Length: 449
Image 1 (cartoon, rainbow, N blue to C red):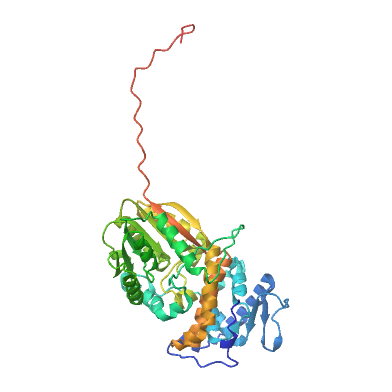
Image 2 (cartoon, rainbow, N blue to C red):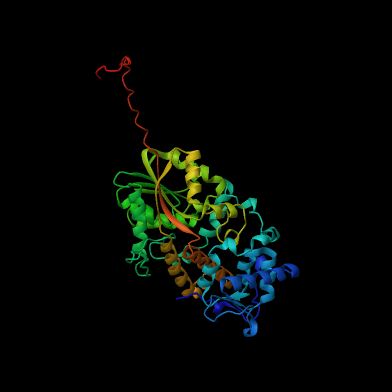
């Protein structure tokens, strides 16, 4: 099933609530920049083999019918938005219904492949015209972090329940694989695949009967439930009131409230000593300036001999450095204050600021592409129910683009996901010095040895 948002695409600009969506409601007017954006898109279409359809059946450049397709309903608005704010404008233009695609993931996968080559080297200076810095108000300080989390995770538990499986796991599953390594993903097998992911992480942290476990980032409680069912005691930290409420209710319903405590607490305020620390796709919300504090917290609360197991989305180190500090459409509308790390950055941060070291890592990016596909298909199929919860078409198109954009990132290999083990290296054994002996006198020629 491919994503086609055509039912939400108006024949004429639909009314947009300017209070909720000011930058979607307002079409900028930047003729010179729009002309540059048009020429750049034509160049990308030729080089990447994209089909750009204009109103009336015209094509921006010649292209085969089967090529990944960008269908422009309102080209002028599209080019002016991109000319004004680059990829943020690209996303806002989709929210506004200026463009569409019969296969959004195929189009975005092509654009996510080697994205650094989309703009020619000699024109990189153009980025200064539209790239903005991240707002200081979204930096994930202790004061700002709760607001950032609230904007995404407190949208509505009912919304997430519409497209997640019954475990309410909002992170990559681990599916069984075919002989060639292809994930065998299906909606019917998603809950089991989520449990497989959780159990692998708990095994990595050696969570067992009697283990004291700290979870950084509760989600809706499934990992805490699995750990408690093993006989562990769990303290789970979240900044989402919606998640805390539902997680507590799920834990109580399972009869495990005596083993799990869900605290509304910033990770930096964690207290206690734990045999295991686990954290699933939470580091992405921490923000690069606070990675040292995140890892230092884990180091501080981890008992001697303890193990920390993280699941983290990662990206290539060079791309992480290039995008660090840049305000993107995802940050503006989906995950304010976030930053996807590289595996190198995790190694460097732990080495510089903690006694922990990366002891093992296992990547499974294709499984995330399939997890996102299943979520996207479910979300799209239930668009009417999303609307019944009070979310307007601009929001629905925003989330369709977010899910498809994320799926494309993993399908293209631009993004990866890892399960990472952090441990303290064993102290090196000190070898006893050899006994000091008087050197033997040198033997002359002919003397027996």
